[in-house]
Image 1 (cartoon, one colour):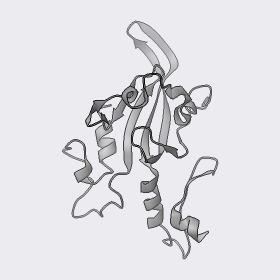
Image 2 (tube, helix red, strand yellow):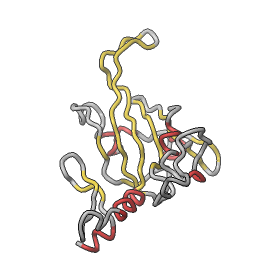
Image 3 (tube, helix red, strand yellow):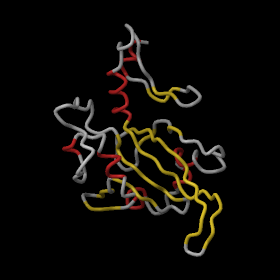
Image 4 (cartoon, helix red, strand yellow):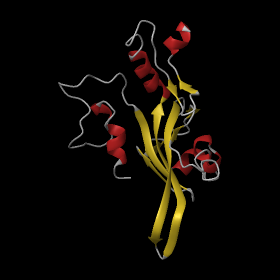
Length: 184
């Protein structure tokens, strides 16, 4: 989880960084400004036993909080579409993937996609031996509006009326920008 601040902040305007960083600056006189304030909304790691590490830290009414503070202690992430699809019985190939857009429970009004991967472990930890055992899901949350602005930026770049869209491994559409919807 120590790398999460750098992952999230490196694709953000520096005035939106949560913590200062010595290297990996996202802005500078030789770099073009971002088309958005921040690409990644969060980076996270959620264990099968419902222990979560989330960056940036949750804030509940301006104070540090946990996932349980936001959604209640009885909330099961195993039923959330983006986690459920990554559980071993639903992802036996252990593929990383993009989750379809969904409303964020932490930031009301925000629509996200997540790049997700399962985490497996082999080894001994606290006198218990794991053998290729699923222990968690990890991912980065990406705002739909940030991806949409990137897709708008590449419109008409290759040829007149060309456009981009985000698809999954089976070529199902995940995101296309509003300008493309209007063009089609």
